[in-house]
Image 1: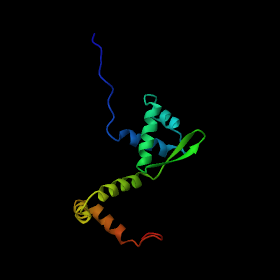
Image 2: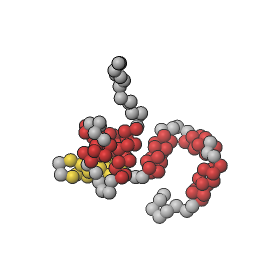
Image 3: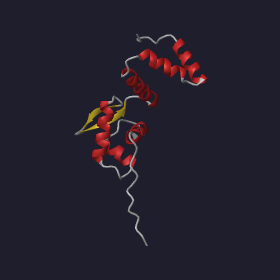
Image 4: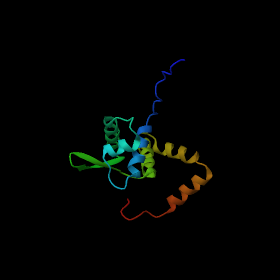
Length: 129
């Protein structure tokens, strides 16, 4: 009989961040790192959860507030807001914004293009520049 010495599957890049954000969104109130760790299962070290939360804080994806001697964490936006933030970051890193936006729009399927046109046709909300 042979023993199976395979390593556990490594998570993909960003997979832990997605899991941590999903756990925070499922919380009824700001959650501690310990709560997130329990929610994700016992194989994840507390320090790993703290590292992921700190990275998400640096990216603006979560906020934190003091809760005793530690912090309570909250998602900064929903999934759509996070995706929009990522798209904006990519766009901000490009020299020719017009070319990037034109390429993006021409690659949209017709339904998404129509939705974008409808969204752009809406008047700006109060307080928007």
